[in-house]
Length: 199
Image (cartoon, rainbow, N blue to C red; front, side, top):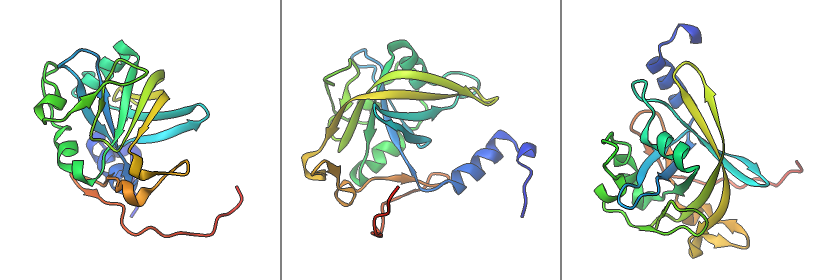
């Protein structure tokens, strides 16, 4: 089957992309600096951009032509926290994608706990096995939908002790969540170790 990509609607294109590009890591982003108004939302268009300095990026679409709370808060404060959830946090992660008025904090609504960050004003999730405090570097705009790709330099990593070993993160112990198409998620599954190659 061949599909002319330019003939697709936004929803049709999204369904194909989100079903084809799998599994995807999830950035669980805290934004905002006001106590009681910390925004929390998951984004599965997420990757690391550079290792020196450590830099990550995620895409945030507009909703009905309006900026999402995450976009507005990051553009105002120039900072955010990327949390990485494990399987124990799946339900909260999924529910945090539900739409709420700007004055509703998903963190409070879901009964999640935060702790102060060390380098920025935005707090991080205390139960997340990994959190990255980020300073906004750049916002890139793409497409006709108003997509914004946020690029942030990681100023501090917070890693749970039991998953950190000799400068690396043990993925088996992390047990990360990955996103599939639709309201579907997956766990890491079998890890296949190959012989290292020279890059």
